[in-house]
Image (cartoon, rainbow, N blue to C red; front, top):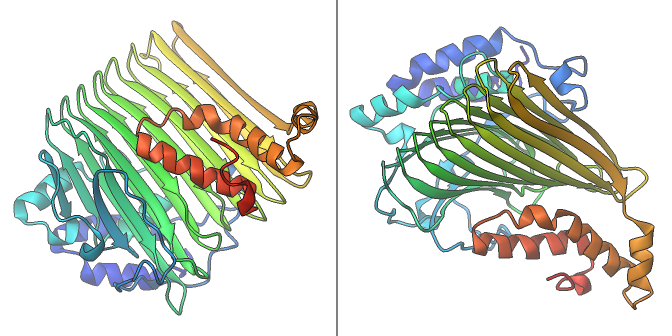
Length: 434
């Protein structure tokens, strides 16, 4: 195995709490016995790892002044937790948690908290999953456990910010979030990845585990808004108990390397998942989404919609898989992926998959790739709309139905402004789309 993460792994082994040491050693053994994927590896066929540096130092625990770093953190009306280069930043976080929610850092856990974390940690991901999950396990000196009590109804969103600063040398961030939604609880969680407005040398290797017990409801939003030079390989694993509901939304701006895997496991009857996303690479950026929805038991439903707008010489990958196991009768599952190329140099590789072993199911999947409709552009231009503004309006219209699935109104308003700026490029066009 490459030595590019050896410094970080050695640092984690000496700084992790004693109760995590066995977990780290098992992860490191899996990592060092494997090889980095290549273009011949099916799951990495269209995403190369050439952008990874030969060596990464551990992330420093340094303070950051948000204004000096050019970082604006929006307020969504709830509780905010900020982590700078993977380290908790109390000066940027709210002091008081809502009733029914507890937050424990792995490094600070007492004996009972450590036992509770250890009983859930890795149970969603499993031990035979992706290579970079093993790397995350091996570097797990710290993490965050978000525990939502059974029956708790959290009205305002929980906002977790993962902020990457900068260092003189290339550095790695090992992000780990473990969320337990107790029986019949209800909450909203916003994961927000952003960075200092400077040349980034960061590599984030992240894992989020979502455990929804029977009857729990979670709205999970994951915003990948790092700078274009930042590298990110991340995974979200969710397990749904009986009658649990996961409403999940993903947004990714492009970067040199951005790969996100999403796995949702329906393990209890009556579980439901809505998985929606938007990816927007431009320039020479790259975004890769691999999703897998596992239907293991009867009477579960899922709906998945992803939209991509790829501009300039950017590339995107979408691989969406629905897996219906033998016992998953009465399953209803749908998958749709549509892509818009705004340049003749833009490229997308899309592959929707259905793997069905049950005979009483309703399933559908499809994918499209198209360019901006010249007739629609002409229609708008004949009514006095400039071509640049017409392109903004049509691009926004292409993803608007996905943005509408965001249930948090403050977040939805924030995304509309953010995306209008992204499409317009010319500040004069901001505000042309409402």
